[in-house]
Length: 157
Image 1 (tube, rainbow, N blue to C red):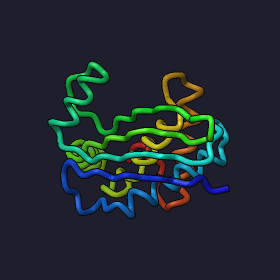
Image 2: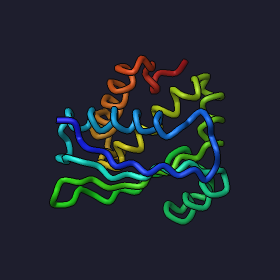
Image 3: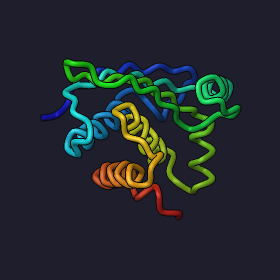
């Protein structure tokens, strides 16, 4: 069964290549993959996805992670409630996303899809702290992206 998605998209900075419909499609793909994987039991997700500039990205990373630089994606996971609804907030820093895509010689939309999927999986409780958890998360990301025609993001070009 396909999980229901309530997605709020906020634009702290404008990025015309990342319209709501595209971000939603990627989030839905991540949810479907996670539901099939079965690590977390959930029937729906209520997520917010905010696109930010470098200053806001840096402030959030500093205030919530103690790291004084803008990072590509931050996820705030709130767990799954008794009704099976997973909740989370995802913040993507557009200048970091653009820079990384250029440096890694990846198409911007491919990199954005990966980071969106990565953030959604974090919002469901996936992480990459332990090696076996990282392997599971990366395998799910890779399979989800492959189904979309996007190459493995963990293989260097």
